[in-house]
Length: 156
Image (cartoon, rainbow, N blue to C red; front, side, top):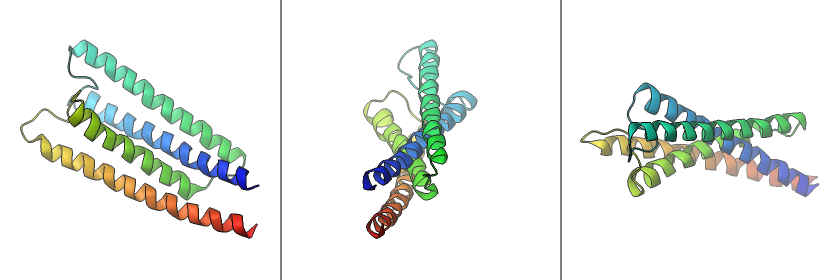
């Protein structure tokens, strides 16, 4: 019984993480890549390569979103969805992806910048602070649901 509860608890979290990662990737791709034309996923080559890299990035975010929703549907079918934990997973997935993008891809790998302007640091700070805020919210929601599940397991 404890193992089953633990599995669904993890599944709630992973479903939210995949969905959050996919949604923030979709928003990034749609707004910054396609509508504003601020950058491509890979800007160290030609525009054609940049567009191909955008397509691969978009496909990745789409598969993450669909995978998260398949897990979500399974949780609903099993009557095991814990909304607060799932939403915590969304914040974690979105925040971790955005922070990875802002630190690793923008600054360490330098495969693209948010925007190619003189004061890019302002964009970087906003991007990474929002990411850290989402991670904090996700961690708080996840910890709160961890404590509730432990209490339920002990009482059963």
